[in-house]
Image (tube, rainbow, N blue to C red; front, side, top):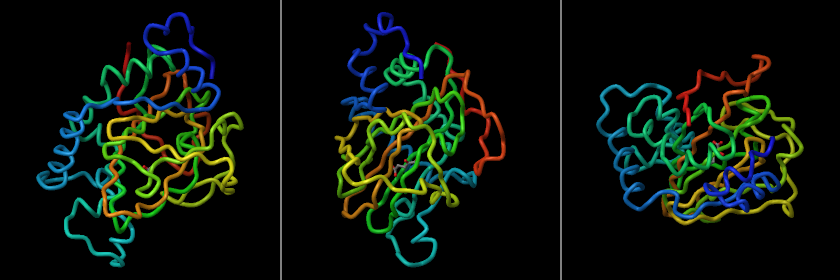
Length: 259
Ligand SMILES: O=C(O)CCC(=O)C(=O)O
């Protein structure tokens, strides 16, 4: 990815962040969301789960271990693996895609014209969640050049025990590695060596900003606590799918954003 003009973005983002992004493939930002904003996120999830009369099929995806009957849960919300493309289906999450602090960072790294490629709320509930396998997000999207990044925003404190993000620093430099599998099991054929893996625990409201080809994974939630996280992916509008025979369909961008 070409570096944006560091002089121009200096007032917007610390050079240190930019350098870490381009070298290591990620950086963390403290308190990207306030406590009040996180409360509003939780309230909106509750509304979606409890009150929508006609929930679109793609919006709510359940944990496979609950679906198979292996694990029972007390409340429907605790069976949800993810809310998918919720910025398409819900006005609150659509507005969140234009959060000024997020866009400041996204524009600094990707330029003035952006597509919101995908929004997700990763619920990782206690007792029934499964790991998310090692993967690169651009193995799903297949956008070239990879002017693509993800925001992963912890809404609860994310720890090693409850399934925080794990990354392989610098892995984006190797491009897309071979992937296989179906659905959420689609992942890198080879898991990285333990010595290369870095856990990224975060406080609620903190964010991991990561390159679209950074290898990452999350373990299952082994605690009684919840671990909810938002994930929004933005790409520069110059990214293209060069072929369309990849395992995943890529719908139209959820939003087009102009600085
Ligand atoms: O489990 C998580 O929170 C991360 C999931 C993830 O990396 C993804 O769906 O791309």
